[in-house]
Image (cartoon, rainbow, N blue to C red; front, side):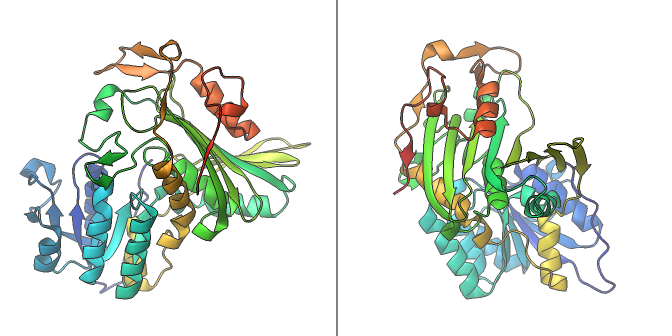
Length: 394
């Protein structure tokens, strides 16, 4: 997923002073994105917050102030905005620290490890009058509006449901890369890592956006089935059914144990056709009775660039906290659910096709595709290892 070319800033507009918290791992993408916008004159990187300072070769540009103390770094650099890409359990305290100092925020997904912490973040930003953008990059795709328009125009008849399917592969090194990886809790803190809430969270958030389930009050019921093939606390092969106030059901089936990983997608089902959206590619396919299939590729607005445009030109934020309340209802259901059930050994195979071994579940790609197509949970299929019951949110 390549970043779009930044638009030229209006003449005389000063760059936004930015601090980046978390510049390694996925944070490297954010560092490169900040530097991209810096070259375009939209932002200026003034600080990096890491437990171990970045070396000159890691900075991807001129040296900047570095500190492990996020709040102190915000104050010493005079930052206007911060990008937070840290372990999930650190999001809430850092987001609140930013709001208390009048600093605007791009907060990586998932925004928090609990619904209560999410509410605390939103309340802090609202009380301070600061902007808070949640980093669901797929919601910056112009395809989201295009799919909504197609569905709303009656192109596929009345919408009957939205499915999401994701089949990725992650090796054992992925789960050992950090102390919080694959954890539901770390000491006394909730983490809620797992396929539904972190690596393939975009699939759920995008499906909710297309089903009218973005806000917390738009979600009326959540049922999750959490499974794991890896020796972790969290889920790596799971599904969920979410009921929306609009009456459109959402079923997402996701795995990190695919034999042959593929592009995740969301599919909007209608009485006379369907619309498939490969959200990492911004690609949309319309299929309907009596017509040739049509494919279109759409643009994308970078969320940091949108935050800058909000601060300098008054543009609307694309992903404010309220747009992710429905997703947080799902995360809360995962947090409160019983621990994921381990798959039987007969359903798992270990392969050695990369730097580290990985566990695969033969046939899981077809299963997640079938769930998204038929809007069925694993327990509603004939898969012998699927969970017999779904766990509901309170």
